[in-house]
Length: 392
Image (tube, rainbow, N blue to C red):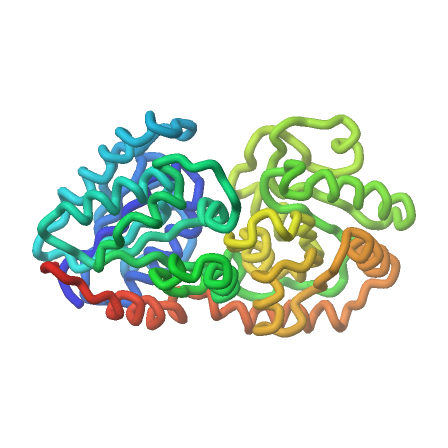
């Protein structure tokens, strides 16, 4: 493939999805070493993607990337009001397509954005291979929801342009989707979630933690399991005082009780440097989200744990369980909160140094399945499988 590939982020502002988009961009550059790439997004988001790339050793490829600002919908605009904003970015992006454009990647998509995109692709005369990556919005398709012309159910059921494919970020996500919505799933391809690692090797004294430190990664909220993490910290630290519990992220609102139990609680998002420092200080990552809540979404916590080479203690989830089977012993899978609590207590009282070191080695070896250089061939196969009718 030669010419130009366009990547567009049509919904995220600032740091949202910046790590994913940087990794996807790297994957595209490695898959197609002879093409130029145009990356479109909100100004603040472009800066964060560039910063994420600057922390990797891919500077030799960056000369092929041109950055262009576009107007995207405001964060909380929804329903009919959002449709006109979706039309605006879609016109901007499709207007940039030329005979030299070989592929268009949409790094994320909303329900209203997909509705507009499909309609415009069906109406335009010149077609180009188009790949869209739905993230959390994909969970809507397996739930009962009231009919609205702009929701994802409606958008997916529109006539499907021949040049459009969606990406499911991992085989377990595709499996759930195929069981629940087989007619929709036939328009999906599978690509493991691309990721750029923060830590490249094992740090010194990896198996000699004092204290044993357990961390919650991300935005602390009840729906993401932070309340359960605070409960866990209270119950375990009372019995094993040498344990520590840390928030690597921020909370939506402060809780004086939680602040007393868990270190690092603040409503202010962490800087990249502080986030990294806290993540590196952990011994284990703990994940307590309701396993039924988002079965069609990759776990950012799981991937961050791999990025900082930290074994995890996870409530069972099809996504995480699938990769445990592929990667080997990289932590602990638990069926309940009580099993997680018992596991954390055991690790705090008698730290398994030899097993811990092996778990870290397994992470370093096994996580290659998420690396852009591994995924480049998968991405090529996805693009080449798209047969465009009507030109392009």
